[in-house]
Length: 264
Image (cartoon, rainbow, N blue to C red; front, side):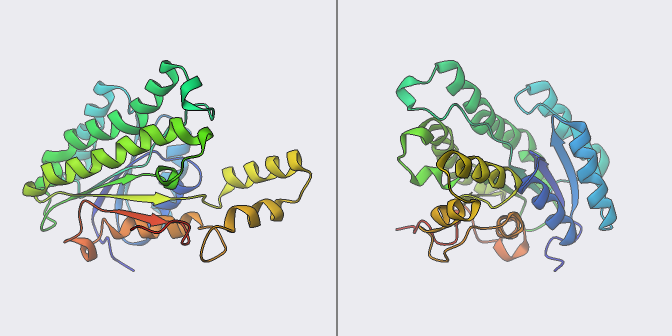
């Protein structure tokens, strides 16, 4: 599937689970990657996977909450590849899982910096390059959101505040950048069955005195497919927005949740 053949994708947030799957699946589809996160060792491991798949990878250790480092990321990407076709804002932070009225403003600000302001600034800084990409009608921006925006559980409220803001940011940018040919879309996964959540399910099972499978079944029960999405499934759905199959799609958010939530 060479849906992304020779496109240059900037991936912000290269961690375990979805970040790793996004990098690997993009390379399998023919893309070259600019890899950005704070942990250089993790970036190098991801770059090795990209190279094994026959594609190029540029490692740029970056604290995306720092404006000078964001600007340096743009400069490094253009110096190496001369173009950028897609920016994927995948990095995220989660404030304490307590009712929002009990959370400190500092913890909420920290989540907003990573989940909202960093994607805003990266999108703004990459806009010129995305508008000038040889890809027609233009480049694209993908916000990795979360199905938490559909939830009203108190423990998720702080996270929902930032992801809800990110949803509205994506909509606003789609309208603002559309005349320049830049598409802006979002993807919203629910629980992704990957290593971090597997460990979380193990902890929940030990606390409740049940099995890992019991917890999995509980989390999968609200979905139509009665299962949880895997990282590669979420990555493939996300990368659709970067492909030429989606050249007329902008301003939308795609749930990748095995049918847990339905859009009205």
